[in-house]
Image (tube, rainbow, N blue to C red):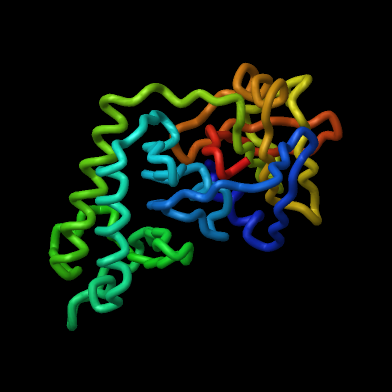
Length: 246
């Protein structure tokens, strides 16, 4: 994405559901989740990275919002017990004394539900890069290997995840791009303007299918540009949602 489109959105951010969002009476949160949360700056980019691994209480596991499969009860409990054991000991989630991670490393968030329903959470800068310099304790490395083994197995052996539910993100631009397309008809129009420079929409059903058909999905930071019927310019992108995200 053009850097200017990110800078302008850094001033005023507002999250909103556009028409067509789906409400659930009760959200089933993952028993275990590893994600890299999107930050406010640059806005929009981080949110396009789905949870790298999410495992629900029934054992259904999702890797990168691209594939899913059920783990055996034994494998799901093993992951839960392992993560609880490591995250409960805060010394295992901190860098070793005298070690400092790279300043620009993304912060991974790892959380797990305990048997009494509470969540343990760790924010780990650079953990997802594999910590080749071994700045973290051995226990955290072992958990990383465990999580990656499951993630690779889900990607390799799981079924493709193509639910009719997407997260649509739009960023207002303060300039006219050299190249752009008209906003596709039938796709919910983000209400981005001077007061709402960044918006997220969780869409399902027919509206999600229209997004999939009409908005190209960008896999990098260069998002497609569009001109709305009102004459505003936006950058937009989308990704598949997981069950607890819509």
